Image 1 (tube, rainbow, N blue to C red):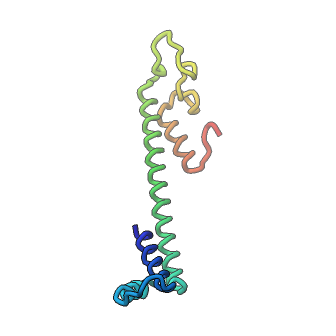
Image 2 (image 1 turned 90 degrees about the vertical axis):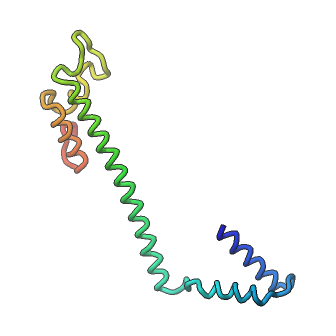
Image 3 (image 1 turned 180 degrees about the vertical axis):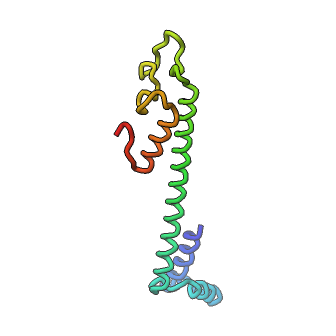
Length: 137
C-alpha cells in the first residue's frame, strides 16, 4: 500500500518535470514536506541504527525458533518418558506377545539398561542435548 502511494507520487513528480502535467504548488509543497521528514539514508548514524535494529530483529527471531525447538524437544522427552513408565518391567507386552519393531524390547533395549527405565533414557537425552556422551555414541 505504501509502495503504491510512493509510486503514484513519483509518477506525478516525473510528469510535472517532463511538462506533461501543470504543477500544483500546494501538492508539491506537501510532497517536499514529506520528503524532508525522511531521514538521510547516507548518514553513518542512520546506517548504524538500521544495523542495530536489524540485528535485534534477527536475535528475536532466533530466540523464538530456539524456544519452539526446546519446547518440541521437551514434549518429545516427556512422551518418551511416559512411554517408558507405562511399559513397566515386562516391557509393556502381554504374555506370549513378541510384537513391535524391536522384538518386544521397546526403546529400553537401546537406552543402555532395561532395569533403569525412564531415568536412564532421560539422562541419555539430556546428555545428547548438552553435547555429552550417550550410551549409543
